[in-house]
Amino acid sequence: MNQLNNPTAQAVDNTLIYIFGFSLLLLLGITLVTIYFVIKYRRSKYPEPTSDAHGSWILETVWTVLPIIIVMTMFWYGWTNYIGLTQVPDNAMEVKATARMWSWQFEYPDGRKTDKLYVPVDKPVKVLLHSADVIHSFFAPAFRIKKDCVPGMETYVWFKATEPGSYDVQCAEYCGVGHAAMLTTIEVLPAAEYADWAKPQQADQEPRGLTVLNEQGCIGCHSLDGSDGVGPSLYQLAGKEQEVEKDGKSIEIKIDADYLKRSIREPNAEIVEGFQPMMPAYDQSTINDADLQAVVDYLLGKATAAKAGPDGATLIKENGCLGCHSTDGSESIAPTFKGLGGRQVTVESDGKEITITVDADYLRRSLLKPNADIVKGFSPMMPAADNLSPEEIDAIVNYLLKQ
Ligand code: HEC
Ligand code: HEC
Ligand SMILES: [Cu+2]
Image (cartoon, rainbow, N blue to C red; front, top):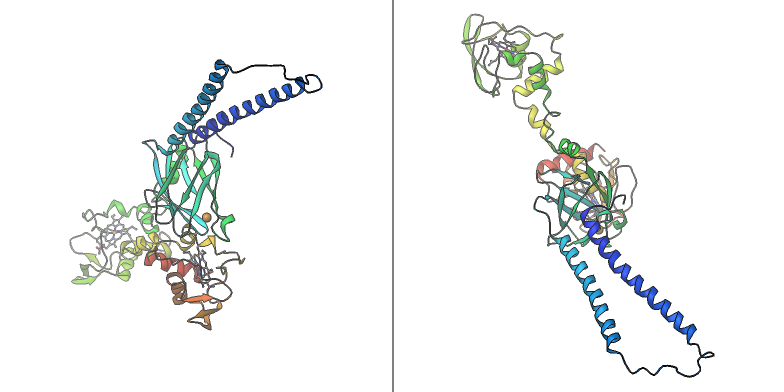
């Protein structure tokens, strides 16, 4: 709570100060006048009433009209500022927030998911609030915004941060044993840093094979888009039949990893029909075996698939698993993930107690049908991970097996 000059905080604070200011003024004024009269007209000094007033229309009008004006301005002030909290500026960026026992997940328009809310400074943000289970409440004190997240219903809040920083978000609706831990932050980044954060991470994830092709100048003779140059295009080679000249004879070869490795290490062993034998040989000292493998994987279309796959460590963070499970061995409401692969667990299955060694099947079942086997000593409160794709489930299972 280090900054309050943002629009929503100002709206709420101004209304509060206005109402509180008048209340304080009236409290002090009335108390002081009361004390003054009590002392001044005390009985020892004036045993008999001294005044004989029978009414004053001026006084009555003033003390009726003045309070009406005061409470009506309080209402007007409160009303307009409340409306301001519900009217989202047109240029607002939308983020979907999902509350679940006991974590927050934020989903951005490009599909990216995080457990903290990342936003650029000086940009209005509309947060669409959802709940995956019970009622939670999104409370960001620095922006003076608080709204319930209700299952089956969409609510929203908006805010605009005017200074970079990290601002607390807390669940403000008691939602079970993990409620107090249902904390996260709004990370407000300077515009340039946010753009950096939001840009697709393509550059970093370029497959190694492609990097080698560029670095070694292969692209000077080979295209990657299907057009032939000095050498044949390296586009979609996997499984292709290639006419080559080998020992003076023309034969047909099916392109596979061995053939590709040979084409690079000894390009003159087989010459592709229609091309000159002018490709230089690349030996171990130029392209080592690991890079050769990376190039071959890339040319066979394997590298990209492996790279783009979801990552288990990120998935368990994004999907709120760490709201209940730990990775450091500590246990409260749910078993820890530490040492899970190969662990012996005692579970209750159809009312019987059985001991199981944790393997991929068991983990998959735990995720998709968490109530089929209940780990002994814990309550059946794990939600089914049925919002995850099969690839994501696999990635999580592989990750958990290695814990
Ligand atoms: C000076 C131009 C040149 C350079 C540089 C070059 N090549 Fe070649 N490459 C060729 C030619 C010409 C052929 C076809 C004749 C042959 O088979 O040797 C060829 C054939 C190939 C083939 C067989 C393609 C097929 O369709 O069967 C592969 C694979 C290949 N090159 C990969 C590479 C890689 C990887 C590099 C970089 C490490 C590279 N080339 C660098 C000229 C080049
Ligand atoms: C609301 C709390 C909660 C959340 C969120 C949660 N779990 Fe669980 N999980 C539990 C509890 C409690 C158990 C033990 C009882 C049972 O077996 O159902 C459990 C059991 C498991 C088990 C079996 C563990 C063992 O020791 O045999 C696995 C695996 C698991 N959870 C993975 C996950 C993953 C992955 C996620 C995120 C997609 C997740 N859980 C989200 C509460 C939770
Ligand atoms: Cu909550």
